[in-house]
Image (cartoon, rainbow, N blue to C red):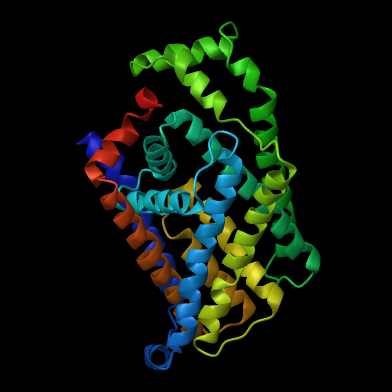
Length: 342
């Protein structure tokens, strides 16, 4: 009974809180106007939205390819498929297993060690965090952030600075202490090996595979491509609400789309800390209110974005899992045994 409560109690409570917030934000929704907007939506712009959702994932796969290149060159589409498979598995098994599943897939298909591939995904995530912080800084410095009680502009600037310091510091620590972590003597290594024994894993081999993935491209062009890929993916992400808005005749200022992406991104991170699902949806709903977008149009833009992402990203991801000969139960078992198999 305690296990069931610990496993499902918080997610269910968080879901209830999330639904309550959404209903409160849209308490004055005109349902008739909402349906009218849905019926008159331009399908062509929805198709453009779908294309950019996939383009964002391809750019992320291309960026990952640049990081992984010196370990082993892997095709961009294969890496993109692994990214989508990770998202698909994470929706069905909401345990945060997405990085483990994508790393496991690539390691299995490319005969690499899972720990090595996993480390490259962590580097990619940290770089995304740094680039996102820079976007937050641009939005804050632009001086066109809608204001509420308090100073939202200052809040975004501080959050962006903390985000930049955190992820850039983590990147520095990974490369600075890579050689130290591979040794046998340091205390942290002995503690790691001791913990690994609990999972019947070889701590030394595990540390070695993880450290092998702490790589930065030797080629200047590949290093530049990593940054270009991260920035381009964020730009494409910021256009999702542009296409969703054009489908129903809503056009905002260019910086408003960046504000929506940044505000929604910070809301997503915050919701993960407090264990409330739907952080991005709640955050963007509040951001649309701050921008003065009518509730009916804002909800349509959010739903178009969310539904297209779920159908394409998760749908294609599950197909990739199926074609790889992996069912969701096997993916879950492998994720739970990751400390043994890495």
